[in-house]
View 1: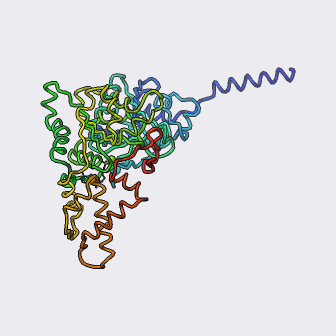
View 2 (view 1 turned 90 degrees about the vertical axis):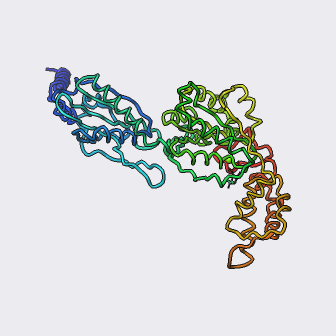
View 3 (view 1 turned 90 degrees about the horizontal axis):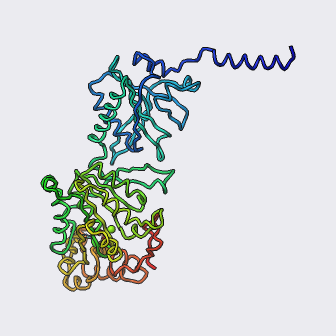
Amino acid sequence: MEPEELAGAITRLVQWAERHAPRPESPLRRRLGEHFGVDPVELPVVSRSLEAWDRPNVQVALDVWLADKQFEVVGVSVMEGYRAGLGELVRGGEWAAEVQLGGAEHVTVPLAGQESITCVESGLWLVGEGDEALVVMLKSSAGFGPGEQLALEVMARRRGRAEAVLAELRRLMSEHNVYRGRVLELRSRHFHDDEGAPLTVRSLPDVKREQIVLADGVLEAIERQAFGVARHAVRLRESGRHLRRGLLLHGPPGVGKTLTAMYLATQMPERTVVLLTGQGLGTIGESVDLATALQPAMVILEDVDLVALARSFEPTNAILFELLNAMDGLHEDHDVLFVLTTNRADLLEPALAARPGRVDQAVELPLPDASARRRLLALYGRGLDLALDDGDRLVGELEGTSPAFIRELLRRAALLAAEENDDGPLRVTDHHLHAALAELRRSGAELTQTLLGAQPARSLDLEHPDLEHPDEWEPE
Ligand SMILES: Nc1ncnc2c1ncn2[C@@H]1O[C@H](COP(=O)(O)OP(=O)(O)O)[C@@H](O)[C@H]1O
Ligand SMILES: [Mg+2]
């Protein structure tokens, strides 16, 4: 025999050996085979992809669903960054033999404040036995963090049963959704590919009615629009009225637009709040979907002019139009309240006028009149010994200033008073207030004045707003 012939024979022998040698059995296939009593390769799998932030919802849904069932949780080790689904795992070739079964890994997902929820990171739940046996899998495409994709899979003896279980789990996820009634903020994936969670649970300050000073009737009008519809939601819905509604709060800086939005959120604690800020640019559709899924809800879009004028990724599609489209897409039964705030209603008007019915009510928060300024001095003078010889004169001098300015004025006056003497209650006199006023008005404090609304905001560079650093916006 020639050496070449021998080499050929050896190659064919190796190939034959590869085909006929006993295969190492996949531990998962064996385990599921025992569970179902049949080879799992034959069994149907149904799958549904989830949002990355849905892991806690899967956990609570499974906790409820499994409460009266026999089950076991199993973790699966697979190569980092790649998690195969149930079908692949049981059918898999050589690599499937390497898969180790073990304890499931857990991950702690923070909710608001100190609250958090411990969830299975990814794993299998082996449920029931015999004909009723099921396997549920939470599959994660990559490590925990942004860019992660989740899917829920169910394997059963019959496809219909797998589908019914998946639907039931989806229903329980929605019913027990851990984000309902909370304050949520989405981050744009485009800007934050490698940092932070895509969804954050936030907490907002509790704002009481007494903390807001507005001209007579203004807060009442806002409340009627915001709470009235909520209070009568059932009857309005039954009579075919739409529940989706939009409220635009406009006025100069520092007059309480943000404060009022926070107050509305405080007053409706059961309502899910979705915050849309510069960070969330590009998540308008998702944010509105989230609000809809967790209704009754409130979407707060602050300083909508700045956001609206920044072009989104498609150059012709301004963010505001995206928002209006998302609002259009809502069914009229959906109880979602949109609260928009802006310093520049004039810039928004054309767009809003072109799409009537999205924003049902625009409420102006004006600079405070004399009576409101007096009430603001009392509000922010609380806890101080305010000894004014001529309160009316001060009220007159403060004409054209905003509530935020008046608050800052009292803070500075209190500081000046504190520097004068070391003990006793802070006695704040006209002298301190005028000194503080002069300080605030001094040139160089111009930016402060603009931000506090002591004079009308001059035009900001709206063509190129710095959306990453809103604190650094400066007047020209
Ligand atoms: N109408 C108001 N009544 C009481 N305090 C106010 C009012 N408006 C503003 N302030 C004070 O000024 C701060 C900043 O106001 P903010 O609501 O952020 O103004 P805007 O959003 O209109 O620019 C508030 O947190 C509050 O302390
Ligand atoms: Mg504001």
